[in-house]
Image 1 (tube, rainbow, N blue to C red):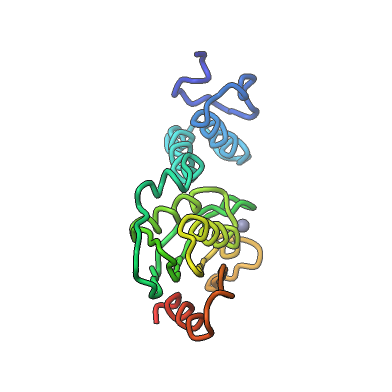
Image 2 (image 1 turned 120 degrees about the vertical axis):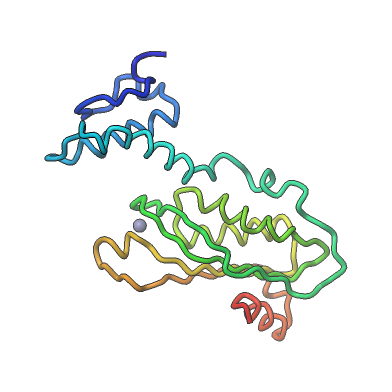
Length: 210
Ligand SMILES: [Zn+2]
């Protein structure tokens, strides 16, 4: 261990430390926090309010990116059960918080999932955990929607599954176009061809909580 791994904030930090490649993720994120502060030209990086900010930033970012640390199989574990019921199942309005991969600003919203089981169902609490697994990564909303859909389709082998996400994006709200009340809807589905028209209607009604 060397001096870069201590918790002492370095003053007027303006470039990567020489040993950056050897630092763990926690320390790298702390360095990133220091670099952001040092990029604010007239800011006093040593004022009291900012002294612990790089460590707080590191801790927060590690939490927001913790979805890289597990796989769907680990999250779901034993949470898949046999069923003889074939009716549509839905879980609606699951809150999520994510970071957009283009600007690393938050986007958040609600996820709804609906599926027609073949012979397996998933424990209902596992769906929000699966959403968090993918949301706590650098993301775009369209990929998040697709990843939840693909994972449920692969794990449950349902007849069909549909996922709908409604999200608000700080990168749209705070910068550029400043569209503050717009929301983005994304929807994906798999297996629709196996459903009758009536079943398709039921699947999408369930997705909308109707
Ligand atoms: Zn963005």
